[in-house]
Image 1 (spheres, chains in turn red, brown, yellow):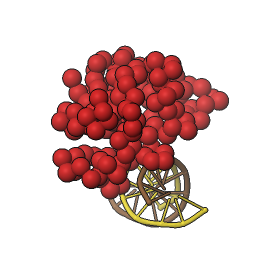
Image 2 (spheres, protein in one colour):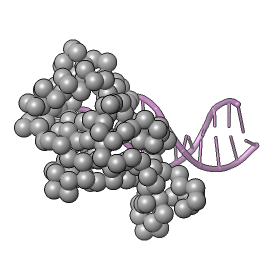
Image 3 (spheres, chains in turn blue, orange, red):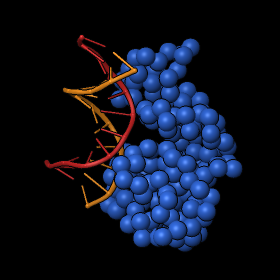
Length: 152
DNA sequence: GCCAACGTTGGC
DNA sequence: GCCAACGTTGGC
């Protein structure tokens, strides 16, 4: 069982949307490191911190869980999609994504500022300068602290 | 294989 | 909207 932080812009796809839809395929990741985490490291049941980037304020909005293993991201084959990739073929997909399911929404989001102020979280990747990875691993202890900060 | 140019991310 | 940080692309 591993733990992750996954970023989404709430204007594009928010935790509230996931709460309504229950599950979603995490499509549109076009970074190899992030893809490799989804393809090779994630397992069904892994815990996910759902992070709102480009939000006011930015921060962890709640919890999700990996609900199906990685499969080819179908948006890479869709010419009309902004995520279309002409290098991808059905035989050799370039991009994969896992399915995540809604778990819980924090009563109040745990803001980036709170994460920075919490000494025990100083080593978290999301805090670090220039850290842009949209899918990143999280220590269990950090996951638990944030869950508590979120009131769960 | 180097690296400059360019594009994207994401906080502010 | 700005811009620092970083990833990707493509000429050589």
